[in-house]
Length: 89
Image (cartoon, rainbow, N blue to C red; front, side, top):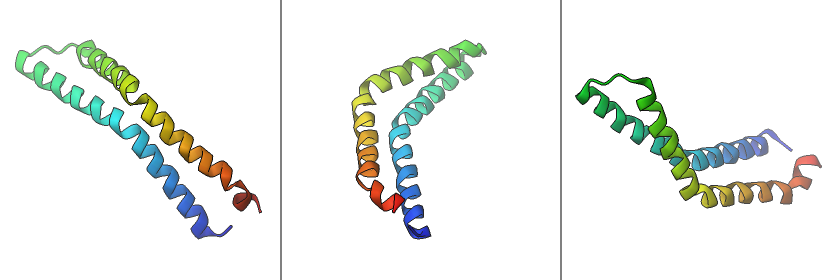
């Protein structure tokens, strides 16, 4: 196992993490931006007003994107386990 192999494995792992977490982070960013615009126009500066809609949006996104996210994680894990003999030996 050389350094190129380890770097390729780390790159694939980071790519998988970004791919899985990306939709939820983008959803939270969009809802946060909408809530911030709403707070700026109405001059309401309540902390829970920014926090609770993001939680609800992420939970809805998790229900919607959950099966796809799980399949991506399982696919990456299966590839790791199938190539385990290359990692050890």
